[in-house]
Length: 334
Image (cartoon, rainbow, N blue to C red; front, side, top):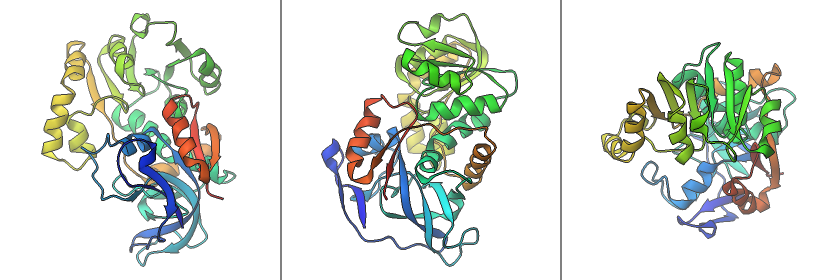
């Protein structure tokens, strides 16, 4: 079968589309005939070697973190799925393998595709949708009436985050360029800050919760407009000790490393009287099922910017890396 395989860390030449053996499912695995796979910034960051402090798999490795397709084989202990089921999944972070014509997924990480959703659209949901849901519901505890600030609302996670925050009852403000404003407003955003023309730290509003999807200067500016006692969760900046403890298996070495590298932003947040947390989301078939229900109920739209054929996956990943995508980018296997 064809797969997009990382042979060495670095630039685009480190990964190639080659033939590899079909994977064998373990006792709790379903093997999926992959019809489409979603692309995310984590994919090119992993290829660049930027996640080596967190994940160190043996190379060569089939890349890819989310997929949609048909179940074609099941392990001996699988109870939730049968051959022929259509599923979507965020593959476990230490496993990858979605950029292939077939892939194995633990049954607990998969869910049935919502009725009426095509494979390409379904493949765009898992990683970004789960990230937004877990950040807003679990980490920030967003409640009705709260003011939530989301940076980068027109991106892959942002398009889900706006809608999920609205579903939770929040008043939502996001940053976007003029090119992205129509999209974020169509998704229900209440207020838009044009980051190309306005300094976020100068806005008059104060916010109860912040979701940072950009990092850098944007995160620093977000600190200045949060209410004392509030919290910012980031998926784009620097991991802190709780990331190692809660998201990555409790490694004390990683916790110490993250304490050092995140000292600056944690100190800035502490001086402002707010909390800071970096989230490394986790796979969850149950949460994915909830997202599927919201899609079926018409409460959650999936925004796909572009779909590429699998043969052009390197071009698709370059487009994601450019930062120009509005919504998600997907490759279709067949």
